[in-house]
Image (tube, rainbow, N blue to C red; front, side):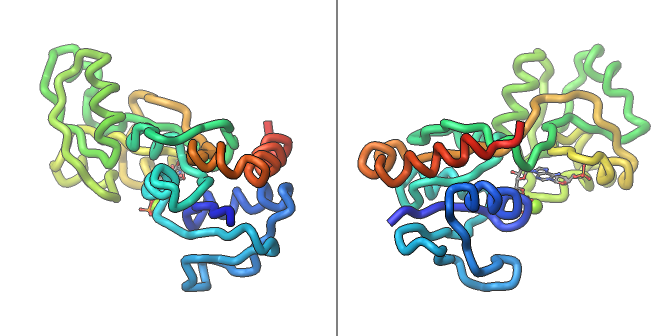
Length: 212
Ligand code: PRT
Ligand code: MG
């Protein structure tokens, strides 16, 4: 049995065409079905639906053989036990530093002020500001980071931006790009050795179907 871990939403939607290229189709839609284990047209392949941030953990421990996870999530996880053969070029966005429209980020940084930064991406934020030599107090959040500077919880946020509409709607501006983000295929290292005959054709089909 090959188990593939996906999260609902954009990753599931954008992975479906890649699975199709590998001859794998799933009849259930995770948006409407409450099933967490979805059978596919292939008796030896199943999908499991997990939180986006949990995908690397399922694959690391071998509860899933393969997964699809954003680079944002993989950077936070650290990648232990994961083979990352492919950038799937899906669910693209940017990891950014953002502040209120009326906040003078440049002078705050120039003056060596200690910045309060709210984010779900604590490792990423810590590494970014350490490399710049900017002192920060990190505040861990689990969602809706855009709210933090509006109510005085933080000076800045580190968050993903795609269209920029969420920042605009909340009178925030992006002031720095930290990384380009896309989703990666991750494979359990032991599974790749033990189940290579079943896994390699899936990797090859995905590699062939990736949009440049
Ligand atoms: O929802 P849950 O808490 O379970 O986890 P999640 O929010 O991490 O999962 P999900 O499914 O929303 O995102 C899965 C992956 O998609 C992320 O790990 C990213 O790699 C990728 N991705 C691509 C994005 C975005 N684009 C994105 N725009 N993830 C989140 N966003 C959010 C962003 O955090 C911000 O709040 O969308 C908002 C900004 O969007 P714009 O278009 O207004 O700029
Ligand atoms: Mg989400």
